[in-house]
Amino acid sequence: MTTASLDWSEDAFFEAPEAKPLDGGTTSRGHLWHTAPQRWGHSMHTMCSYHGMFPAKLAHYFIQRYTRPGDVVLDPFSGRGTVALQTRAEGRRSISNDLSPLAYILTHAKAKAPEYKIVLEHLGQIEKRYRQFKAQPVTVSPDIEMLYHPTTLRQLVFLREELHRKPFTQWTAAETVIAGSLAGIMHGSFRRDGTSQYLSISMPNTFSMSPSYVEKFIREKGLVKPPQDVFERLREKLARVYLDAVDGPEGQVFHEDAAQLMLSDSIQARSVDLVVTSPPYLQVVNYGTANWIRLWLLGVEEVGRERGAGRRNLDKTLDHRHTYDSYREFMTRTIQGIERVLKPNGVAAIVIGDVANPGKEAIQLASKIWADVSSETTLRLVETIDDFIDIDKKVSRIWKDTKGQATACDSVLVLTHAKGKPWDGPEDIDWDEPYKDGGPDAAHQRVSAGRHRHQ
Ligand SMILES: C[S@@+](CC[C@H](N)C(=O)[O-])C[C@H]1O[C@@H](n2cnc3c(N)ncnc32)[C@H](O)[C@@H]1O
Image 1 (cartoon, protein in one colour):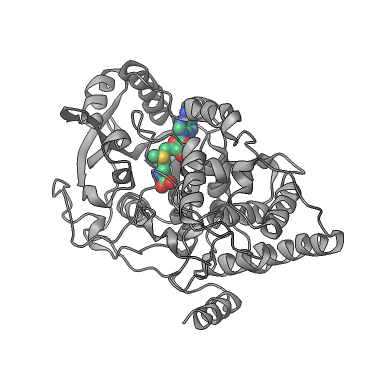
Image 2 (spheres, helix red, strand yellow):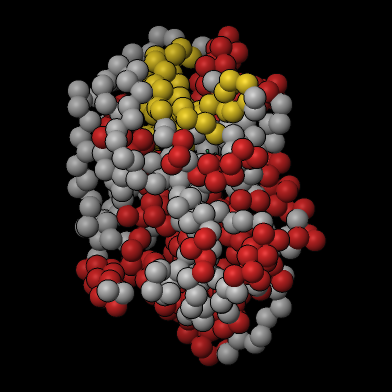
């Protein structure tokens, strides 16, 4: 295998290590989540990277501060399921929702992950069928074909067809864990020794670059398709994902428009103790295009350049607020939905980033939205927490000036009902992780065996 791919923007991970605490210092409670180590959080968070994800420690901060075990925590824009997993791991009950198929599957996997051995058994059955039936050569879009060795592709297509016997909203918990973990290894960089935990040619893991860009890179750098055994790589991935114990209550997961869900009877009025969420910002991420390879796996068929309508439609559905007015309308409905579901003393923490305004000062979207929406809701602002982020560590940096519109400050609007008196938890947030390393021995053994192989 070649390591030529090191020229990709391979450090473009959203959660790159933070050199120093970067507290905005405007919280009423001292330090924010930056004092916790970078990799803080449950092992299952690493299932699959996701554009726009926030760190698990942000979810932990609000869960600890505003809830007690057994309370209900809602994330209506759940992305990779950060809040769902951290809520479960901390013994609270989660309700989650996302309109993207990828986000729905990742969230479902984490909210309902069954025991490790159940997932392995299910994968074993699929593998047995694959070995028995000797899959035939497959025909897929050239944009997918250019990424995978023919044997790897045959296995991938087989697994994909097995999963798609049912619509993804009917997949079992074991199936969503398999699909989500497979999505996580669909593409990524080779190790320095030329081996890889990923299935594709060596390329970034966080997001999918455009097909034409990838094709050019393969040609110019002579990138080689690694003959990866999908079942083997997937078992390794599952072992890493299961290193920590998952034994909290299973959460509920929806796949709907967030505002519609919160304004409908699917969630009981005044039933939620805490909302922690990050809605799409104004035109920052194209959730369809940025995930086209993973979306192919999950059944959004139109991945070929000539057939890009599928992912463009998804972009539009997931972040089509191309004008501030339509974004404000979207956020008004969202905040009214939150008002409906929040308990009388409940709290909502809504994370919204600033948006760059080429040639002008960045738009402070959170305060602008609150100024415009506050008259349409009876919720009141408890505080705004400004979380300053080192711009060099944000994934959007790699788009340089052309596309990177997320800037250096994420703000958190902390809201409650007009007469709400939120329970405000411990003085100091406890950063202990009781679930750490509590996963099955079999997962630990497999991971340490793998480490020895790569030393
Ligand atoms: C900023 S991301 C959330 C990331 C999440 N906090 C995490 O840690 O992964 C915003 C999410 O909103 C979803 N989304 C966009 N429009 C939506 C809508 N109308 N209803 C539900 N989800 C939507 C997108 O698919 C995306 O996953």
